Length: 245
Image (cartoon, rainbow, N blue to C red):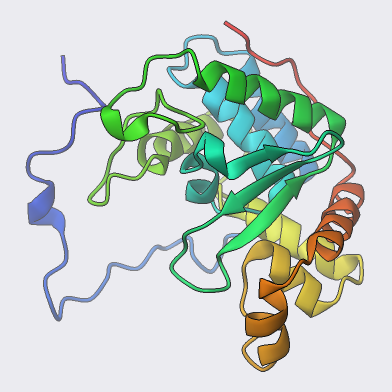
């Protein structure tokens, strides 16, 4: 039997060579924000399938994607040291990103989501890491995969498989659609572009005061109030039974 978590020994043959065009994803122009009902269906599917290898991690990730608008790997790559419990909310620092704008703090506002994240951090201290590189991570059990050995590689595959197993046509959204939902919700709520970009990690290229200078100041209040608006506009946290086994 083939171990699905083993790296493909022929993967190097599939990489693009210099000058070779990237294969276009036929879904790119069709992908849209995920709806609350669709996100809820995905969460319920995960919660009800104890045979999923990364069931708990998948459940936590979907809940966090919904309320943060983060990229998948921004959630999966977090270390416990990046997470600071403030009591009535939890701050998650994203210290590394491909862009300056991506380096930011996100905040978990909902009480249920905060409690879930606390449960995840507690678990992380007692489970066996899949490899030495995972020591201290929020999700230490997840195998690293792909060319860059990202934690999101196998978890992303598991989430996509779960999405495809849902009833109905779910071909027009994916895990990045949670980010699209967050951005569109903030737009609909009338949040300023500067505040919106601050929490989702988009650049304010034409405003150096926001994109460079102000960002290095203490913007805790602005960030928190913006996440509070997002939480309200989304209709609150997703609801489901936490898989504890």
